[in-house]
Image 1 (cartoon, rainbow over the protein chains, first blue to last red):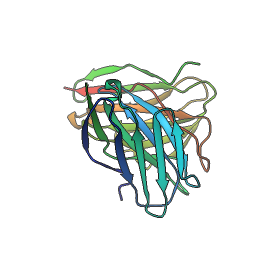
Image 2: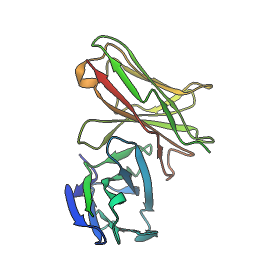
Image 3: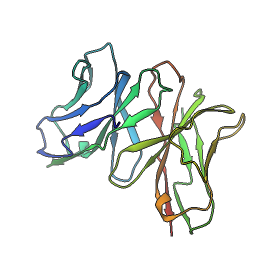
Image 4: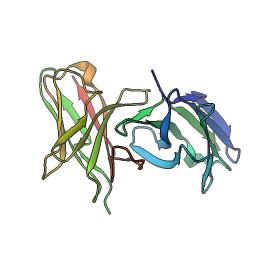
Length: 112
Length: 116
């Protein structure tokens, strides 16, 4: 079964606004990671949140994890044009060999 | 500390040829993962290797695909007799630890394979 379904698939907002992306998954996890991918480029690791954590901050990023609902959210505050990218959540299932299972991603566009 | 290195960045092959993709993990990382990304999709796990060992190859197609991570040198993903459906971006990731622990995976820039 597929893990890491992102919602929405695409999001377009004005510069300076906050952007929220959600991720749902299906099985128990060790951790959940968020990555950014600019068009045609590699993935940049943003943040890792472990299954026993509920919230984590890094600069303008805030990630929450609700294991009871099997969901996570990524909030980018005070968005900038440079935040335009695709954002993926990836889960690492418990008992697994740490292979990451990615969702389809949210394409975020920040309009200047 | 250099990041994960992949080469070539772009590779064009005709149907039936072989493709060899190389990945050098970050310094100090002994665990390597290969993922494939089709256009407009997320990454799909292919294989997880440690030095001289394949730990999990559950995402590898049964035929034509193989991977290795020798004691010396980069990890190699090899695709024999390529077909058009193999056209994709192939990403390598590395981490300092693996099975049973939670560590970030750091990704390389990818190799974009085009089969003509």
